[in-house]
Amino acid sequence: MKIYESGENYLETILILQRERGNVRSIDVATELNFSKPSISRAMGILKNAGYIRIDSSGNIHLTEMGKETAEGIYERHRLITRYFMEALHVDEEVASHDACRIEHVISSESFDQIKKWLETHAASAKG
Image (cartoon, rainbow, N blue to C red; front, side, top):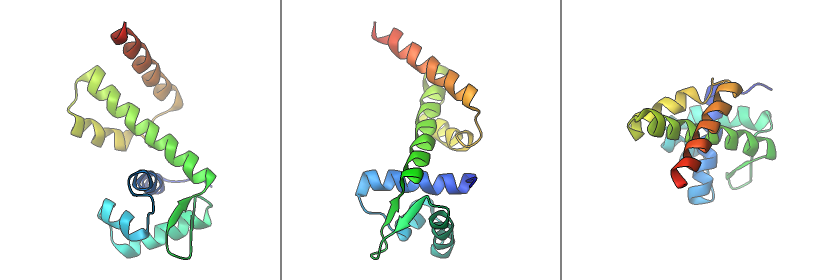
């Protein structure tokens, strides 16, 4: 099933919150994204039905293997695009992160791979 930008944002947010807090509930996602609880509940139902998350009897959200893999890929794109904008283009961190959040959903694999190569090359040359 194709996941859309909003679904990718939810998965990324769940991943980040899990790393920060451990347990994540729908209200945590709603608070983090500043969305209404009903909107998040509907989105969590869609992600659950698609196999990206499961919700336990206590209401805690858990990423499935597919959900975790998807979320980690999105988060990697976000972090590396942000870093590229800051290091290569000297963009302010807040602006770089905001722009990366939009671009991470539509960037081609080819372009993203080139960003990764650029960062690897310049990180290596900065070390030695």
